[in-house]
Image (cartoon, rainbow, N blue to C red; front, side, top):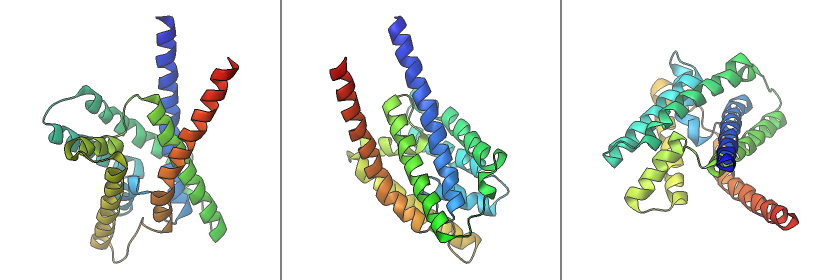
Length: 219
């Protein structure tokens, strides 16, 4: 019983760490100014043209994802309802790093600095996603809605995730054109995130598998 509680505690710590790293990656995308990840592209556009912060916009969109999940399933599942808490906490953490620490006010006038920070954001995003997956605790709302779509359409997670990312990007472009005469939040950084986050998550999984094998062999 003690070992089980210890294991669950470690999973919770891993999940919280992953949530923080994912939020930090989200904020770093805004620092790079080369476009944010598809995950928060819609919240980013809303935060630019409405009197709400990026964290508040992210919470709002994540809540919409949860409602979509419940609508598609036609039933209440507590694992999905708990995603509402994740939406609120994640939004708060995003604003903590962005506003309270002040990362969103950082100015990077040199192009190579913008590229470096954007690549760092991609790495942080992939690590955060990987840690939350390994924790096997509660899915964040974007992954949750992708998972439900997979169940309903009998699709693979990878193909559904790609479709989700493209949909978010298209919605972001449309909202940008509605609120402004030019496209915002979407750029080369967005494309890099779509291309690199998935493979990086697979790389961390591979690296973790090697480490786990070596650790088991030594013990």
